Amino acid sequence: MTTEAILFLIIGAAAGGFINGLAGTGTALFALGFYLVVVEPVTAVAIVAFMSVLVGLQGLWIVRKEIFTYPRRLFRFVLPGLLGVPFGLMLLDVIDASTLRTAIAVFLILYGAYFGFRAALPAFTPTLPWLEAFIGLIGGVLGGAASVSGAVPSMWLSLRPWTKTETRAVLQPYNVAILSTTVCLLAFKGAYDRTALNALLITIPSGLIAAQIGIMVFRRLSDTGFRRLLILLTLLMGLGILVAELT
Image (cartoon, rainbow, N blue to C red):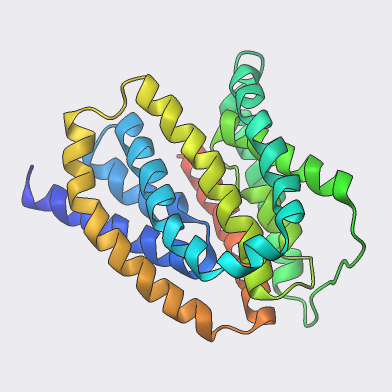
């Protein structure tokens, strides 16, 4: 592996690890572009998925108390999400993935632009278990069909007036669960070949270190600051998806 390839892998892992440590999501948004420069798309996705799960485990530790305090809240998202992944894969047989990703990108951009620049954030307080289960399901379907499992849950959670640790206690394990399913499916398809494994040996150390830095910044954020961060990430996610599809 060339020095240039190693450098791109390290930078991508550091960028993805930092944002995952900071927000509990967004690894692919910041890392995938670097990986795609030096490895094939399937290998890049496999690396991103594995790194998202690995660095996400560090994020789970800092919100472990909230996870066990509100287990039903988490399961309302995770269980339907896991059921949605295979349906998303089947959806690829009847719909064009590029069109779907473009539509999602436009929606994310409109949402992020509208709420991201408001002086006061909305606070949706009613507890609607059926709606949260549906959002978890949609996230799983979109994860299987377009690799954007965290988009819709992030949008919903940014509207909830929860503390930052309560929000992360849903978003982080949700992403870990959905992406763990993705890793298993990719492994079954043989995506983790020698090239991918060699790349992981390079990305794992820098990703884990960067995630710890992101976690330190997360601890300094206010609850409102964390909600604004999620909204900003939805905007960036939409822009990133749109640029990728248009180019």
